[in-house]
Length: 303
Figure 1 (cartoon, rainbow, N blue to C red):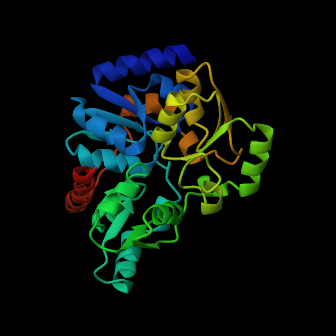
Figure 2: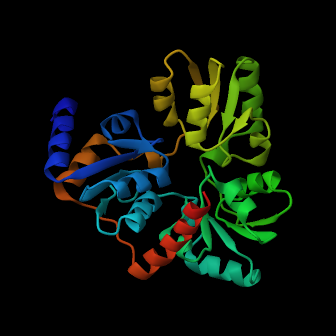
């Protein structure tokens, strides 16, 4: 099949099997174009839960598909590329978190949603990059354990100085790759541009931003801003939506290193095969699912 024929087959199978296709903002343009919903990881899982679909095709990485299963236990959740993972999520597991908790007894654990179901299940509450500051501010404790992203944890600590944030030493290998020297260089090249940076970047890079926010917040800021030129400091996949929704504005990637290999694994043939064979189903142990759901629900109550 050529690409057009494959897209037609995907649409036919999707209708036949009552499926919904989700695509993260970092997916390749072809995947974003055929998706029913494009967005950040947790928002996609929430939207999927609202649908009447029997099958969820999650074009993203493993922890995202797990989150969809946590929120939609009765749906069949498929990850088109089974080895599409997240190195940061893999930097901590449930056993390591239990040891971390023993080192700091009685401190609550805030868990970034970019983590496994097992780690969520061991945590008190989850957060996203959009609501992390709000979640931490709302907590009564003055000391908090934050897993797994030390960069997001450091950003929260600067925004909420009245609390002590004890961070796990994980990080996003893609965002952490950006150097302050690259910010300097791009600012000289585009002096009138607004620099929008994700808080998963290192603290010295984040400190140089005109705006710091999650992927969805960056998209919103660029849309609402009167500025016409932007330097984007998050994974390159978001450029597709930014350029599509703002044809009168210019967008440049802050660093060529902002490319997530795992997010670029999924292709149209992978979507087709997932629908055709209903392969690579994601399952979550029910006891773990219930505990992880509790951490997510406590977050949703606050946000």
